[in-house]
Image 1 (cartoon, one colour):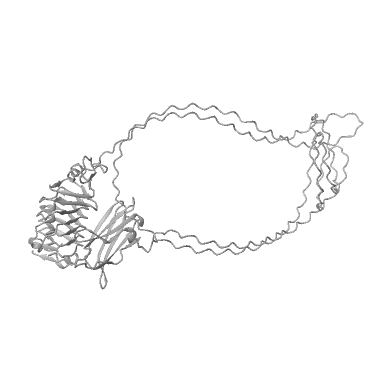
Image 2 (cartoon, one colour):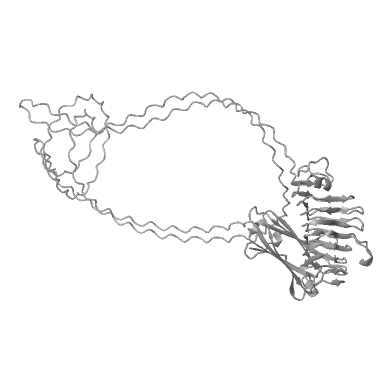
Length: 612
């Protein structure tokens, strides 16, 4: 939820006239999927804070709504509450208007000035400079490493027994405690390595004798110079590995020194104020996309590049270790039979595969075919655009028609004629008889009548007139809009005449709206502003409908001539009307007009002239 506040607005009279006579609130829902609920509350601020406007409505995704309210009071305040959508998707602006309908600069508030919800933080200012980093504390000293435990003594090596036939391997004796390791003598310089001799053929491996007890190992002498490496003898079978002695205990690790304290962080600089965000302009409708041009032919595929040469063969892995040679048997006797050939040693690991050779160059890519011509944007008969003075247009937003009549002629039923900003002089009647179409104005769209003709005659069904400002260069004894048919809507418009001298009873009979006799049902007149006219609207016999939340001043009031219209939520400005609602002879008694006290209370204490 977001709560947008104008704050108290001073509207004290200047030369006897208050600057702002009405306020206009424009709301835009930029969400593509979420609707929002809007609650608008207006307060009169005199000796006490009095609620005088309260309206709640729903705004659909992508929609724009305008609400106009009476504001000819010395001080007021508005509160706009938004629920049901992300607050950042709802944009609101607040406009004060004087008696001529012009904006009052001092009473214009944009979204960034209204944004005041206690649920949201204001915009973030620029980040101040980072304070100086405090000095790093001294690192504590490293604790001492504990002493390495003593290595156990090595057991005595038993004498080597004579080699006989290989008997059963006895159980391994327990390994004695490893003695302390003596100091290692200096290593002698390495002698040159002799040439490797030719490996002789492998002789018969003799039978392995019983392994005697290992005797005690003597103290290691100084290592002499390494002599040339002799020819490698035949490898005998590997003897059994003795049990590994237990590892000595690891010394205790010294305690870690204390870490010094961290220096204090410097203060953060003050955040700067963010500037106001400008109003977002209205997004124009997207034109219809033309057909995609023909795709050009694909170019021929380039020739395949030459395959790179095969990489070098990796180095052959090292040959596995040859087993120890068995003991030679006693001499002198007859030559015994040749012993069985010993088992072949395990094959060494395969060397790593050599690197792959470089890949050949990729063939040249064929030429891309030419791109087909771009299709043209075709006019959309359901969204037709008009811009005063445009020449030779086709009704698209990029090339609008130059007159409203052209737009009405081109639009299809249920479509919209977008009357873009500008002043449209009218000297001939425009008749609208297409079901469900909308005449959509924009904030600077002004219809200026310059002859004694009715500018708009609306018949048929379901026509909407939304967001137009209609006036005239002189007072003409005609209405701005004449309505006949069913279910028409006149909403969010401003209709006013030029000033006329003297009391309103002597004014030219110019009117905002007039319904046709016996030919208008289901009319909705809502959220419009009427002023400086003989009458805002004249409802002829048998007209039915509703008149809701309009602002009217400096007129002779709504005239109900035997019509059945429901009036609610309307308000009255200054200069005051001669009467607010007039009920002429022949108008029914009872609901929706009686009791008159309720009719007055439901319309901001309306002044009612009852001639029934």
